[in-house]
Image (cartoon, rainbow, N blue to C red):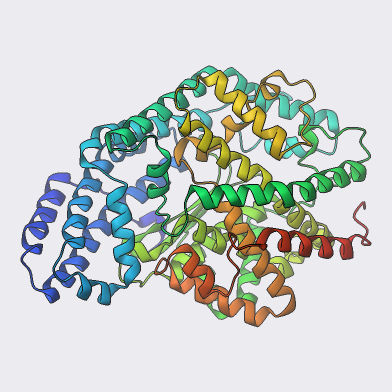
Amino acid sequence: MSFANFEYQRPDMEILQGQFEELLQSFEKASAPDQISQVRAIKKLREAFSTQQSLCYVRHSSNTTDEFYEKENAFFDEVGPQFEALVNRFNKLLVASPHRATIQAAFGDQFIVRTEVGLRSFDPETVEELGEENQLASSYTKIKAQAELDFQGKKYNLSSIQPHMIDTDRKVRKAAWEVNWAFYAEHNDELGELYDKLVKKRTAIAQKMGHENFVALGYDRMSRTDYGPKEVAHFRAEVKKHLVPLATELFEQQRERLGLEDLFHYDEGISFKNGNPTPKGSPQDIVNAASVLYKEMSEETDQFFKMMREKGLMDLVARDGKATGGYCTFLNDYSVPFIFSNFNGTSGDIDVLTHELGHAFQMYESRNQPVMEYILPTYEACEIHSMSMEFFAHPWMDGFFGDAADRYRRNHLETAIKYLPYIVAVDEFQHRIYEQPQLSPSERMGVWKELEAAYLPHRNYSGNEFLEQGGFWIKQSHIFQMPFYYIDYALAQVCAFQFWQRDLSDHKDAWKDYLKLCKAGGSQSFLGLVELAKLNSPFAAGAISDLTRDLRIYLSKKAEQTLTS
C-alpha cells in the first residue's frame, strides 16, 4: 500500500479512553506474564493514536491551506495532552508494579528509565495548559507557511526564495535577504508576542509542577537521562574556546575566496565566486541518483530506499502553502517512516535528503523494537544517524553534482563546522530566556545580540536594523516549537565527525558500527549508544579540542586543492 492510500481516521477518544481504562483497571492486580501482555496491548493503542496523529501532521504540513487537516491538526493539539494523561496513568502503575523487575528484564532497563522521565515531564493537572501551548506552537508554523514574498515581480515563500539568497550576483542575493527579513520584521511584534506567550505558558506549567522555571522540565521533555544543564554549559564553553576560532577563520577564508572587502550576512551562504555547487537535473533525477547511492552503500539501504520510493514515503519539493523546513516521522501501524522537505534547487536539497533519510533508515531498522520508546532514541542520538548519513553519502556526490562534487564535499564539511557556534548560541539563548521568563520581547532581542557577539563574532549585518537589534533568532522554529531541541545537533555533529573520520580510513568498520547504532534504536541512553557505536562522548575531557585539532589537520591538507573555480 502506498502512502496516498494510508487511511486517516480521527481517533474516537471515547472508545480509545474506554479501551485504555479497561487495561488500566486490570493491570494493577495482574500477574507478571499478564502485565507484560498488557504493556504490549497499551503499545498497540499508543501506536494507533500516534499513526493517525502523524498522518494528520504530514497532510497538514504538506498543505497548510487544507481546511480539513487544519481542523484535524487543531483536534490533536487539544486531545494530545488528554491522551498523554492516559499514558501517564499507565506509567505510574508500571513503575510501581511489584513485577517491575520482570518487566524490566523483558523490555530492558531503558524502558523503565524512559518511563520514569516521562512521568517527570507530565502532570495531568496541566492538560489544559498543554493544549494551549500546542495551539500557540502551531500558530508559528502557520504564520511562516503562509508567507508571500514579492521579489523581482514574482511571489515566493520562505523556502522558494532561498536560491536567490545565494545568487552569485551580490545585489540579487542582498535584495533577496532583505525581502526575507522584511517578512520577519513585519511580523516581529506578532512573533515576539507569540513567543512571550509560549515562554510564560511553559513557565507556568513548570511552576505548577513544582519547578523554579522551565529548564528542568524542558530537559525531562527531551528525555535526557545521563547529562544535564551543567554538562551542556561545559560543552558550550568548549565550543566557544576551540571551535569558534576555527569557524571564524573559515569565514575569513570564505571572504578572501569571494574577493570581498567585508563578509556580510547575505554573503555567508555562498562559498565560491561562481556560486555554490547545485544538484544536476530535476527532483526526479535527484531521487534516481539517490537510488544508486543507497543501492551501492549497502544491502540494507538498498532495500530501505526501494521501499521508500515504492510506497511514496517522500514529499520533497517546495510549493505554495507547504510548511517550511524538513522532518521525518514514523507511522507505527505501517512500520514505515515518512520524510518531508522543500527542494529549491540548491545543494541544501541533497543535505536535507541525506539527513532525513538517515533518520528514516534508523527508524526502519528499529521498526521491530518491542516498545515505542525504542523505535526512536532521544533526539541527540537521533541526530547522529542523520548527520552521519550526510557524510556516509560523500563518495556518491558525483552522481548529484558531477564535476562540482569535490567542492560540495569541502563546503559541506566547512558548513558543518561553521554551524556549530550558531547551534550553541541558540541553546544558550533558550537557557537564558527560560531562566529569566520575565524578559520583554525587546530584551530577548538584546540577549540574542549579546550571544551573537560571543559565538558569531564575524557576523556583519551591514545596516539591517532588524537584525542588528537581535532579530535573527526569530526564524528558528525549534525555539518556538520544541524548546531545548537544538544542542542535540551539536552533540550529534561531534559524533558524526567521528564517523566521517572513520569512514575515510575504514568504511566497512565504520558502517558496521553505524548499522549497529541504527538497529539499537532507543534501547539505550544517549551516552550508552555513543559507547555502543565506539564513539567518544562529546562531554569527555579533550573531546572538542582533539576534534578541532583533527579538523585543522584535514583542512590544511586539503588547502592546496583549487577551490576558486
